[in-house]
Length: 282
Length: 357
Ligand SMILES: Nc1ncnc2c1ncn2[C@@H]1O[C@H](COP(=O)(O)OP(=O)(O)O)[C@@H](O)[C@H]1O
Ligand SMILES: [Mg+2]
Image 1 (spheres, each protein chain N blue to C red):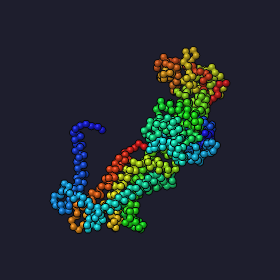
Image 2: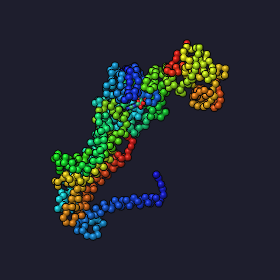
Image 3: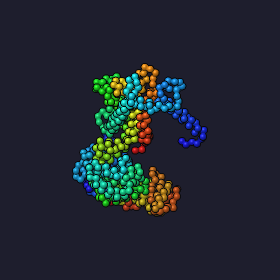
Image 4: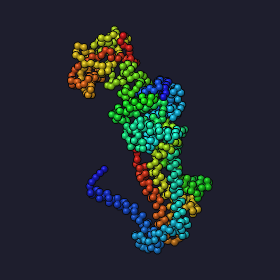
């Protein structure tokens, strides 16, 4: 729809601007807070312009952490979050690709039953099955490990369905041409399905990375070792554990750090991400 | 190069029988066209030869080896699909080389074969392009190239020209035919277009509802159709059919009451008379077989089609005349059926009757 009415243009921009402000203002406050020292942050009114303590705060947070909060330096937590998010994203994508491949291209007994079993997992996110899952992970001696952090979050019906949908749009003749060319099923998967799902994989990676990064409850439950803390749970630890008034400048700096990696992933993958969600022509 | 023998082949999906026992013996280097209306089982038959579809009963042999249970890649065939089925993420070169790469041929050999095929098909300039950067005709050539580089014993084509525009279709059908003559590879070509079938085939197979109605050279099928289906399917516009009465070795056209001056030994009291639009002459009332009223005129340039109707007819009778016609809608005219071009068919079995003694 192309319209050229100044008033409409004005109002639509106004609405968009309001939206941007609502989203951006807290971010700005976070950033500003991370550039002041502790003293300034206890005074009213709170500053709305950046101070000069950014680098000092950054160094403090990254390498030494918050005194008395029980959290490790944020550098370590960022690293843990990164590993967990990548394991979850890569793991989910791999498993979903393979199971979608099986469901779409193979005729095996109980195929439909398996399909519905996968479907049912949609109704069972970690939060619902958290106690039994904890028991299983504990029995497998995976508490305080990266595997323990990521594996229970890996099984994923949504991604399986998405890849199933993608595969269903790929014409059968492509498989037949590949069979005549002599490609084995795995070869077909590797040489044709994977490259053709490239953009979808990228889009899903972005979504799953953020999903993994933002995990809170599960890491909180299974990590007792400080060195395994993830940054999202770390932030709230800082708030709760502090006996004295919270060190807002450091907490905000940590929050800022926690926001960065997902943002970077989105920025890098932006083009593929949009393509993967909108592209229809194969 | 190979002979292909298809022996009493049938195909069922569950309880639905799609192919009802087909026999074809294909000579080495022959170009066979399978033609029939959409849904008659042409693709299914071809795909059974390719190994993409299981065979319910009967057997198929290529080069005197029964291939019923062989994988497609082991049958020494190559196939060209209607939608080309090119790998969209691979360049033209990679598309053509993919099968050879899987066969683990030497790199130099692969390049050699791909380049030769590309030259043959005049696509050498596009080798680095992706399929989506090519026109329909060029994609078609790439699909052909992918088949050629395999050096197969048999080419299988499933309506390869259906997605092209009319002009390109005519050009490509000539090229495919020439290419096949040059490479001398036994070919099975499926189409629903009878013109394509007539022009390309050494022999053609007319299929209908899962059976092979008739197998023969295009002219043979045109001149001696064995069933009304073949008679109506081959030739454009289609053959005209009239019900006629036969008595005392004579044939009567009930609509006009005219008794045709030919002897017949048809025993049934009724038969179907078939006459092609080009075998009808416009005459004066003296030698008229039938009087018709013009219901429509279609000028084709070189020829014109006159659609004529008469009381007692369901369908119009089509007459083909050279050049322009002076008639306009509503005019009446007389037609004469060339006696040596008459076809007769059984009213129930719809099989050809050897009518003239
Ligand atoms: N996988 C299938 N399952 C059931 N019926 C099928 C299947 N494939 C094709 N058919 C049926 O077989 C018939 C012949 O199909 P096809 O060989 O594709 O026809 P054509 O190529 O002559 O148009 C059609 O009636 C179609 O519905
Ligand atoms: Mg077909």
